[in-house]
Length: 224
Figure (cartoon, rainbow, N blue to C red):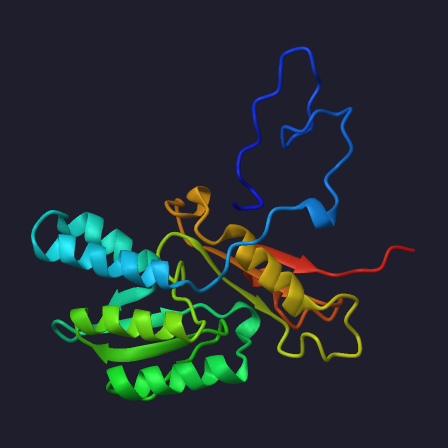
């Protein structure tokens, strides 16, 4: 269950907070919060493969398929019948196992070097449409998601490049980015947004994450 699932509608006789919790009840403790959604799951890759099959058989029209594949990080390249896939990496962070999964998946399924983006993602090039399904499955097995890396969705959360190691930061921006990403991934509100929505987190006032050029920019401060 997501952190932002709708709360039960309160009775008319009770005053509620903006999130629907009765005002006379204590707030949930951190331990009582629902578990966050995992970023990477094989279910996303399976859903993508099933949708591709529906498109192939004509059960899905082109417009529905295009919206769906973009939501899963799959772009059409300029070359005919050729596709690019973007993975979603909050703060641009990869574990050793995830980095290996990226390298192996690219070697086995793609036709060019991995591209590192300015918003701390990685992109894979020169795939066939069927090859995109195989790549998504390989990445999911390695703990890497492409979900909502493109399309009109809540995009990757970027951070200061020195998040978690900068001596000036007031908070670990990388942890904040991870928490935001897991809170919003697969949420119904983020599946059909009017336009793409980009977020960044800076751990201090130097704002190395460049909050001023994002749709939502968070800068940690210390209150006197």
